[in-house]
Amino acid sequence: MNLEPQNVPEAFDAGARDYDGLVGANPGYHEHLRMSAERMQLPDKGRGLRLLDIGCGTGASTAALLAVAPYAEIVAADGSAGMLAEAEAKTWPASVRFVHSRAEDLADAGVTGPFDGILAAYLVRNLADPDPVLRSLRSLLCPGGVFAAHEYSVRDSRAATAVWNVVSWAIIIPAGRVRSGDAGLYRYLRRSVNDFDGADAFRNRLQRSGFTDVHSLTVPGWQRNIVHTFLGRAPQ
Ligand SMILES: C[S@@+](CC[C@H](N)C(=O)[O-])C[C@H]1O[C@@H](n2cnc3c(N)ncnc32)[C@H](O)[C@@H]1O
Image (cartoon, rainbow, N blue to C red):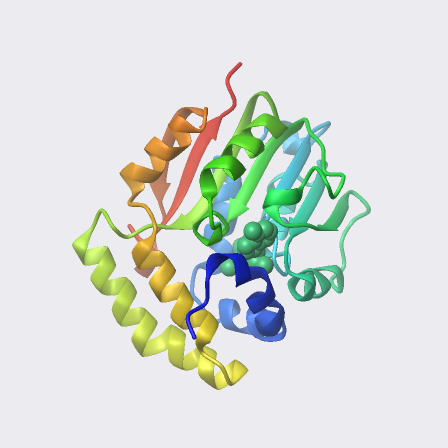
């Protein structure tokens, strides 16, 4: 059965135990998250800042934010209770707080702004309807606050699309099947990346959602032109 975006957090519940092992075997995964966090250019190691990590999963992106902004207050939210349990089982400073919430329901979960920065790592592609979520994330930012989407996007490059599909079929899907006994989440991953906006379309989507100074940078390694940091700011 095909996984649909509205069921993605529950699918991650099932894959939560194996997630860290799988991404740990992906060269560059943690370095690239850290690169996106650095590209947010958070001042003064985060002193006095409030940050949101939306779709924090098992906390890999939270750790990247913490590494570049160790003095910030960080709220990390995810729609999957299983992923969040894996994150919460790790050791964190008191400045990091985890919240079980879908990106669509942050207000109901008591997550309120303003935030100085928001990181959404591998989240937006999974949203059934990204535009309202992007607008609500923008409204959670203080004026001039920075938004970073760390995300796969291959549509603008035939070479990137080819590499992505080869790596998916040859490595990611078989590794997911071996580790978790079910490759459904990883087949969905391949398909969702192929279906997601090209980089140009996603930058336009961010602009339409009210972000300014929109631009993007890719990462080094086999993920060049496959994984990107998309950056934007809330208007001043
Ligand atoms: C690929 S994982 C990335 C986790 C983490 N950000 C990282 O970089 O390792 C995507 C996460 O997004 C979460 N997610 C998917 N759809 C969501 C939604 N609508 N609201 C909140 N979280 C969602 C999943 O539960 C999963 O933990």
